[in-house]
Image (cartoon, rainbow, N blue to C red; front, side):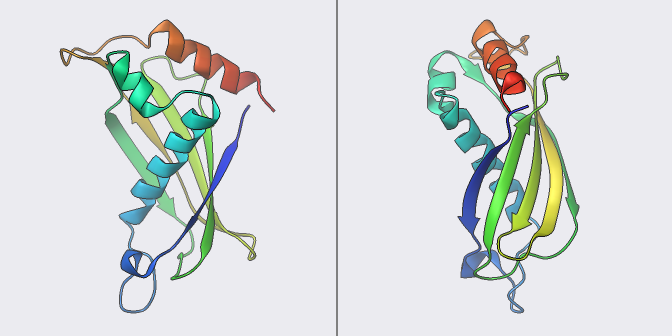
Amino acid sequence: MLCHTTKCRVIYGDTDHRGIACHANYLRWFEIGRTEMFRSLSLTYKEVERKGLFLPVARACCDFISPARYDDLLSIETRLDPTFKAGVRFDYRVTVDGENRVSATGFTRHACVNAHGKVVRPPAFIRKIIQTASKEI
């Protein structure tokens, strides 16, 4: 299964007065991971929306393992779950570069919604992306 990795640095604005990243930033980092994964598969979110499909987050889960701190360089590993049929599910693992330390793991589930706001099954172009990602190593 394809594991796409992208990097992101913890900026000062992501942290509290002790230099520890606020928990809410992990959802933003998850978004960076899935956006860059789609881009690596030659499909941007902008293109998905141009095709009349929207992928709102229906559920998000994050397990915080060890804190990310100001100026840490993070690796955001993102995988598409090929077994999830009702929409799209991404799994994430955030690690701190140079320390071989997991900061958090989690997932997001996304509904597929058409331009009229109606929930629909994942269209063929999304199923193809998931199938491609599940075959990659």
